Image (cartoon, rainbow, N blue to C red; front, side):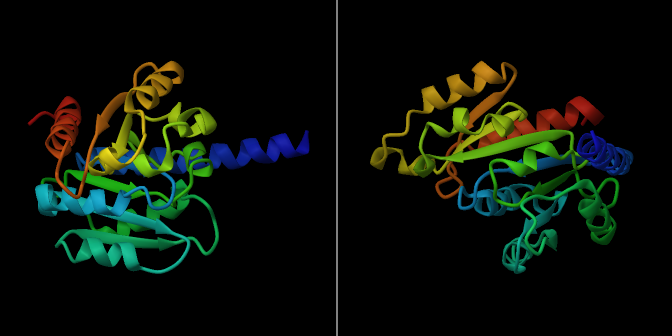
Length: 220
């Protein structure tokens, strides 16, 4: 009973702070996106590609156990970035994101998209609301098409499934139809896209989807 009360208290505190983060972003008319996946699925490379399309309209919060390497990669693209080093924690929470939002000094009419690249993990990050309006999960082709049902917590809670590293499809036996079907079986409303940040395939569709989601909230 005590364990349940403590767990509920932690969850309630996180949700309260997440609500504040969301209100801040909403007030600035910035679409918050929580990007989740296993390590090495291509999150940072995808963000570099999006930085090339959106420029200063994009800002990024990077979550890693250690180093500033990912934030430095984004900064090199001319986009605002803030690194959170968790020191061992397998996920970000709303409390860690709040100070990063303040540190980025976001402005209404300047940034339109704020992407939080969560710590690479297919389990822990999905349980924490950070204050986002959109949840995206990446599954790279080298990981195999069986991961959706192995890690249902994440894939059942995302709005967008991105099957990444599509340029490797000729060399792998990844069944994209299976991955998409299994994701829809536990998450009927999910949108699925196949992308390659390296070649640019599917990136127009992704950018268009983000633009549509933005306009649905705040218009042109």
